[in-house]
Image (cartoon, rainbow, N blue to C red; front, top):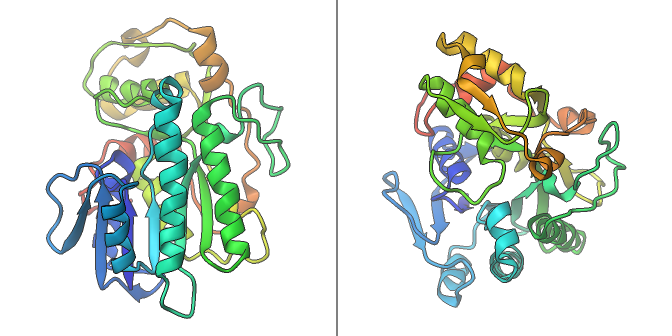
Length: 321
């Protein structure tokens, strides 16, 4: 089979690419061609086909059409804060280029089954001022352009699936850690910075209070879930979109896990300077009813210390835990 990973030069994409290389198969089918697409690609593992360039360009789309992937993991996106700062860029990348990719994959299909598309959506589709428990029936009211564009693509991928042109499945990703210590365009980047700082025994200032709660997942567990999603028995679910199972943890619980894991005095290293607008969106996540996702075989990290260990393990590390 032929597999394409878009956004393969990014944080989560690198983990997905590494996992696919280690496994060499998806759902028991051997990967004959593994391709990576992104605006910029660094050094790739041997044997990976590079499709470097703007995903919305005719050249890259033509090369994707020639590849005719059986499975596509679509991760390329302008992240939340950057999307809100430049809505036109978000539309071009997160909406228009994504829909062009979907059409290209559908039109290039030569087999009897439509291509499988695993789409990295976001919990930003839920918005803020969430109910006491987020359930499958919670209204989707994204407060930011990033979430709005992601939700639009969820709906249109489901429609393409209804029409038999693609076999789509959207996963709503929570806060994924630990992103590299570099500007990311994500307001939630403080979650990753907390892990990096305490692992190094360094002080850190958080824009939320100690009892602020978020939904957490390591990049390695996220990659596993994305690959697993390609094999999901989606059945008759018309939306074809699910939140990933999460660990709902307060900042203090993560600090305690980091303190135990790295032998540091986490509370002494952490300063809290709550910003109401940040805490309202990223520090007030209620419990999530993710029973449907778990029944499909999707997983969380287990507990806070396992999250920390897995989150700080490099993408290319062969160890599984």
